[in-house]
Amino acid sequence: MPFHLGTTELIIILVIIILLFGVGRIGKIAGELGKGVREFRSGITGKEEERAKQDEEAKAKKEEKADQE
Image (cartoon, rainbow, N blue to C red):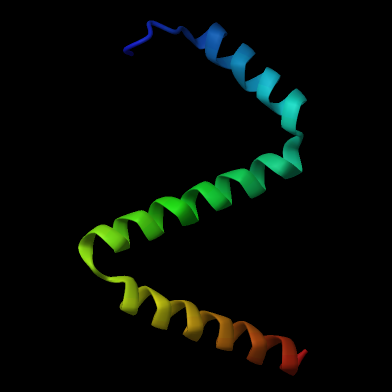
């Protein structure tokens, strides 16, 4: 590893992050980070239009499932 962190140090850092943000918030942060990275990649490759279509289709499917329930 570039910073020469061992397993113990990584566990301590993880515990501190959990204490600061909480378990529920970490999930949201990770999701938002993933979405940002995905948008960045699609922006670089010029696939923004395809991604928008996929998002619209996914949203429509979620709405259909919600209506069925």
